[in-house]
Image (tube, rainbow, N blue to C red; front, side, top):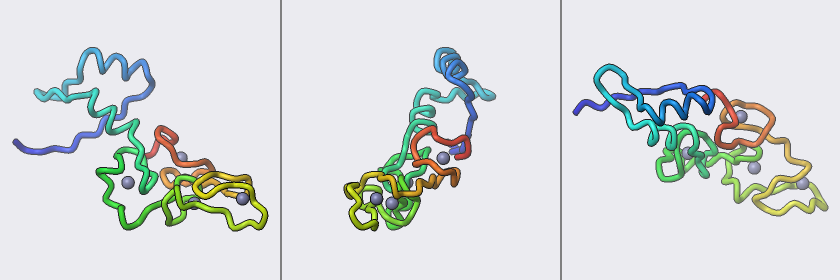
Length: 117
Ligand SMILES: [Zn+2]
Ligand SMILES: [Zn+2]
Ligand SMILES: [Zn+2]
Ligand SMILES: [Zn+2]
């Protein structure tokens, strides 16, 4: 069997529902949409903070990216250097400038946060 990479953009939950119920046919191949949606849209990697795969499939194990600040450390190792900060290691605090590694926006990276994947 020839492996092929197919990426669908499913917009809106209604469309997702429809596709989940009816299945999705492209040519003569029927894709397991439920599996795709689970793996493609909702999964979030705890290592590199990117959407579209989970920790087990991460290819960036040696280059973790923080979910909070997009710097090069695991989210659980995130810490604030501000003296007197009450934030705990691995948690967001008021001093952290949130940065999303997926879209470079000023919010924490999380599943479904961005359109760009
Ligand atoms: Zn990853
Ligand atoms: Zn961080
Ligand atoms: Zn702080
Ligand atoms: Zn984002």
